[in-house]
Length: 88
Image 1 (cartoon, one colour):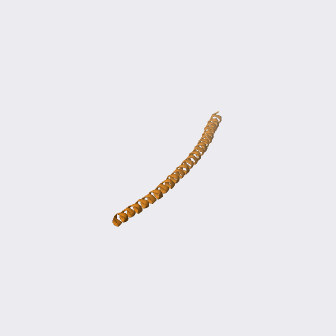
Image 2 (cartoon, rainbow, N blue to C red):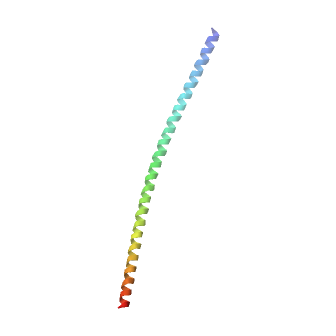
Image 3 (cartoon, helix red, strand yellow):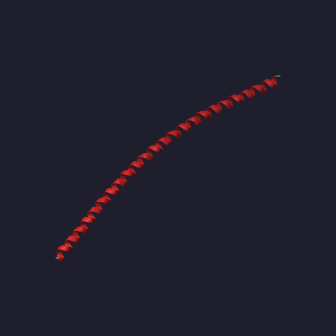
């Protein structure tokens, strides 16, 4: 009888240990899920910032191209006028 009681006590101790480990793993899992959520939010925020910066850079490049195109156009037009005047 004492042997059965000792076995039973060991089984209960193992069960309590497993339950404690289970709870610990569940807490750790919850913490890691929250960390993943936080990292995903940060990544989304950085992606939005990066996209905004790229949009700004693209607009700046377009503006510079337009200005260079205008300057080139006026230079060509000026050369044509100079050529026409010197031919006349």
